[in-house]
Image (cartoon, rainbow, N blue to C red; front, side):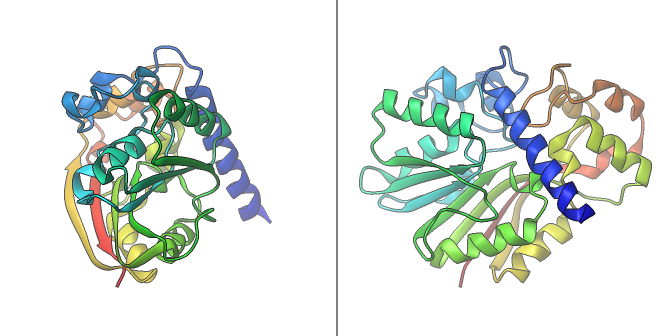
Length: 275
């Protein structure tokens, strides 16, 4: 029973945080400076509406390793304001399709509004949980996700669902946060306090192990960047907090100043294939 309560609490907290991000002014996560910081070129996002950019809450650019091709169907897990969906739609062209799934109604409504304003006919945003995707089996060529799976309390189910909806030979391309070392109990608690993106993170080996257990092959860590104290400070720079886990408790980071736990957090890009 307690596990169910914990899971429900996590889901509610994540939805509440992302819902707040849709109406927050001066978000610590959004804007062209932030998207450049996490790996998007200014040229890449130049044609996207500001309302899409300002709610970007990722930790990387999964489209950079997705190898998207014209005519493909792409699914973004935790699509938020739609930045990766719109970029994927551009890559797959009018004969392809980009679908976003997000559990936060306000994010889905905002993304749909942007799609209408952009007259983006090959995009679709669906309300749903990534642990139970509103997507038919064996219908997707490529799945992307940007700093979302770490927020899930049931990552095994997420990867099982990803495997289900991908076509045979389909690809998974993820940007996410992981732990690269063991944290002491008090360290872990403080990480959970001030950064949702890190609070749900698990060890890299455990993360890739869950992908393999779901049936994925050719699991490859495309890149791994260990976060510095300065980078984590940037993530939590706003006291009001925002959807990517930023700013939950700046004091928590200050308490960890000089602590070697800082070097145990990394952003990674991981690819895999469904046989």
